Structures are given as structure tokens and as C-alpha cells.
Length: 320
Image (cartoon, rainbow, N blue to C red; front, side, top):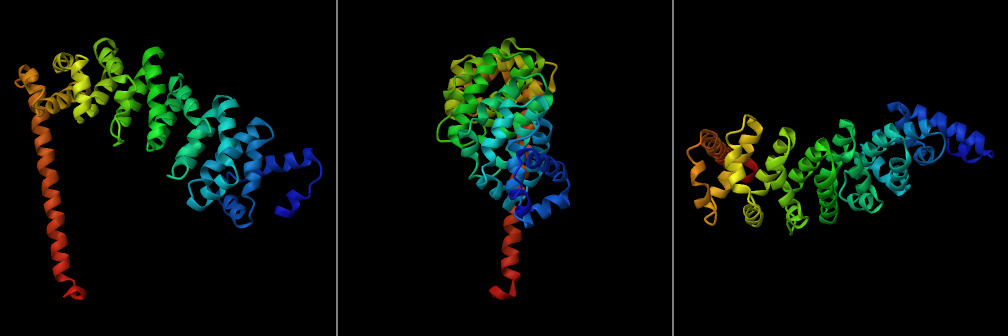
């Protein structure tokens, strides 16, 4: 394969063969043979040139191939990241989804998280988040979860999410709140969400947003409430009265998130006095009891694992 494609003189014939290759590599056995024969670079080339349909097929095959760690490394070394970013930027809507998904597969390794972002992928995923297609939003949210492992990426993702909270439609705002919910769970040295200026916007949307937006926003707020500095920022932005009011909402998700956040405030000496009126509300009590049960269950599991480890160590004849 290497000799045959490399020896073709006419660009038209080479492009025709690359288009055939892009179709064949959607088959698992062909992808396996492609790796063994050292032909992966031709798949990258097929994604770089030819008709958009052919490039889209090659892009899809790259995503399937990139699931394998060794193949992913080969693809990156062959320059696949800028090729996928170009398709992501310039392709039609379907091609953007395929390219975005394949790029997400490639990024699923700590060594490639920053190169993918540095190639300009984050603004492209933000556009998917702003868009009207639920598939695009789902792809963007999933890949942002991967890219946000790097703090620099998380900062950029948060900035784009804040822009969507300000200017996006309701569906985009709900998706952006979901992303911020995920970001607030990462243990970066700084509070990425708070530094982005998102907290006042989240509080505003909890007050004025539609039901879907309020549910997603409440989840982000509940997650943020586990951090002391974020609790201060939330309280200063006026979140506590809104959370207490949300305990009476018909949405189970919203009331659960509000109760979870208020429980975290109740355990903070700086804020516990401000949530006294929530303590007797049934949704607050239910969540409080549920969290106590979960905590007890976690402790029992840890004790069981500890006992099991001790028994195994005692029984193992090689350690006697």
C-alpha cells in the first residue's frame, strides 16, 4: 500500500485512491490492516484533501481508530490534530459533528489535551454549544469535560460559557450551565468558575431563567457550594434567599439541588444563621437525611474494604 500510493504521479488518481481508502477504513478489519502496513498517514491525508464527503468518512475512521492508544499516538505524530480542527472549522454541519467527535477521541489522553486546545478547538466547541442541535451540544459538553482537566483550558472554557450565559438562547444557556457544573467539580488551584465572573450570572438565571435553565443552574450552584470561597461569592451575590424560595418549586431536580446547596451553607459557621428558615422545610429535611444516609453508607464501605484488606493480608501465606 505504501509503495503503490507513494508512486502515483497524477494528483487526480491519488485523490481517487484516497477517497476509496476513506470508505474502506470504516471497516474494522481494514483499519487493522492499515496499521500493520504503515498506511495510517494516508488516512490522515484523506482527511486533509478530496471531496468533503470523503474527508468526513476519513475523519470518522480516524475517530474509530483513535480509540486504540497506539493508533492515537501515531495519528497525533502524523499531524492529525490540525487536520481535524480545519474540518471542524470549515466543514458543513454534519462534518463539524464528526470532526468534533473524532477530535474529542484524540484529546482523551493527558498529553494531547493542551495541543488540541492550542490548535483552536475550544471556540469551535463553544459554537456547537451555542447551536440549535442537541447532538452538537452533547459533543461539546463531553469534550469540554476532557479538555478542562488542564487549568488553562478550563479558564478558556469558562470564559466562553460565561459569554453564552450572557447572550445565548435558553437552550444554550442551559448547556453552558451544565458545563460550568462540570467545571466546578475540578480541583484546580484557583476557582475557575468564580474568576470567570459566572456566579452573578448564575444567580440571575436562577431567579429569572426558564425551568430548564434554572434546573441546570441550580446544579452548578450546588456543586459550587462545596467550596468555601465560592460559598462566599454566592452569598454575596444574593443566592441564599433564592435557594430557600426554590425549595418550594415543583421541579424535583431544582429543589434537590437547592437543598443540597443550603445544607452546605448550613454547615458553614459564616452562613448557618442565614438559612434557619429552611431547616423545617420538607425538601431540605429529605435531602439532609439522604446525605446522612449516603455518608454512613460510604463509611461502611470504607470499613468493609479495610477489613477485607486486613483479612487478605493475614490469610496470604506468602506474607506469613
